[in-house]
Amino acid sequence: MAKEKRDQRKRVTRASDSGRPTRNEGTVDMRYDADKSPDPEEWLELDESDRIDLVIDYHISAKQPVGESERVRAVAHVIIENQAAMGEATVVPATLDRLMREGLDRHDAVHAIGSVLMGIVFDTLKNPGKQVDINIAYGRQLAELTAASWRAG
Image (cartoon, rainbow, N blue to C red; front, side, top):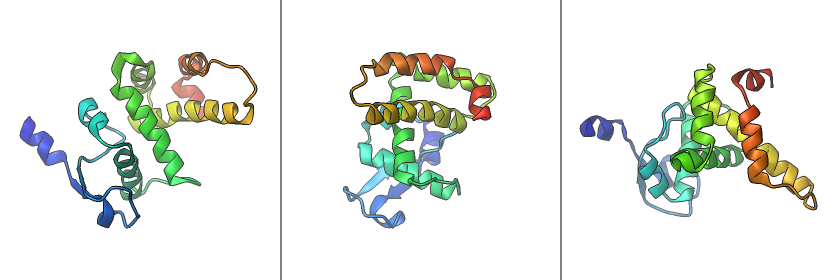
């Protein structure tokens, strides 16, 4: 199994493969695939900028649309993956599992959760004087989120 795990990895040379300037030169010995849960320990050991670059590279190589800002999309992915990697410390792993049981693939489930997160961030920035416990709002909105409501838009 360890050999199979090693074979699934791809050495990513961040500065030359992506063509984008990066803060850190060097390599990352991991490949990101939104349809597969990354190993939590390995994921959390990566530098945040490496995680973001891996998510951007995934979307580009998978020919996934990146929307208006590939970086914002990648940051949302990384936040959700970080929360999933933290396990039971957040409601995200259970929400991911539930959404997948309801029929979303993992990548769409990450996007659904990310849309809730980004909606809360947007509302908080738009209404800075409004007193809202964002953790409670996040938990409540994730509990209300369903595959059907995500598909309905």
